[in-house]
Image 1 (spheres, rainbow, N blue to C red):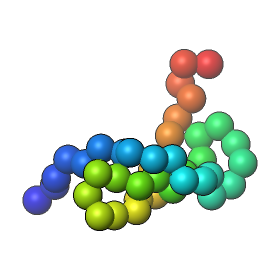
Image 2 (cartoon, one colour):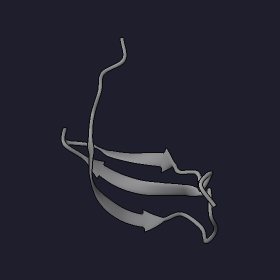
Image 3 (cartoon, rainbow, N blue to C red):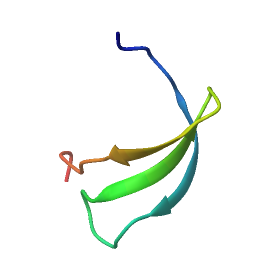
Image 4 (cartoon, rainbow, N blue to C red):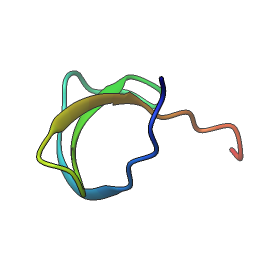
Length: 41
């Protein structure tokens, strides 16, 4: 089952670049790797 969480704090990028993975903290007690894309550029 999938659950919804909200990212509350951006921690750090794993590497430099536009659409590379980032580490974020969420509103549950967890830290996640999140892929962000820069599709609006």
